[in-house]
Image (cartoon, rainbow, N blue to C red; front, side, top):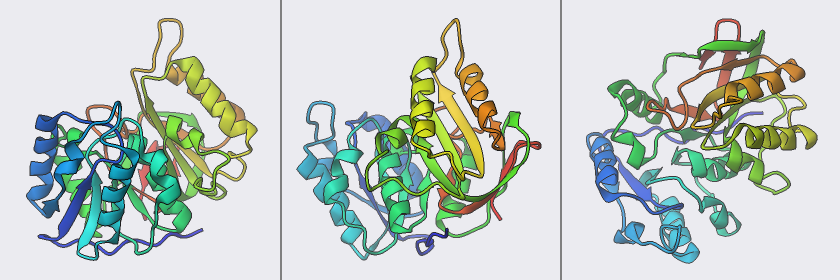
Length: 288
């Protein structure tokens, strides 16, 4: 299982900003825009500021903006303005022809999955409305990944199952990922290291989504599991860590938790589809 790396960016390259999901707060968007403008030339249409109920414009409008960015040979990367909901509604009309960097997380997971299904790598990284709040090391790591430079290993906070797992990193937001089960956009997890994170999901809902993966046989052949952050997912009588650790222990797959990937104050960028080495004993995720 191998995935193509989109061509590396250079300083001054043209990058597109799109809003395939929900509407967003303009000041936080502009802070994130300032960050990527330090390095690249961001372009976007005023249509990204549209709203349609809980979406950043109609499906037709959002899909057209995304497709235009993907089709433009002068655009070297596509950044998501925000997550929320809506990107999976664009999948049926999506055309992925020439690999380029797709940058985002959360609801953007559906587009990551489509990229991996197509054989591309993509960047699980802050959206613009989150990027302006990130510490300098996250921004430097993002630029390094976009420009094809090596990055340091990431460290978690606890071992769930001991062992070492090696394979391409796949996954993303658990809620979105499980919604693609049974569709043609879910990549094959056999031989992969699975990354999952989420926000605002009660422990029983995390349990239910996990069981959906398990009953669908999607853990068969998975080489390791990386738990990112599960922000706002705890209740008084149970925590996300309690529930997920217990579930992971039953699989016996190498698993480590507490990586700062997801909806927390720090969202470390990682390249989905890239080979990784999970050392669950040492709680490290490295990128050979």
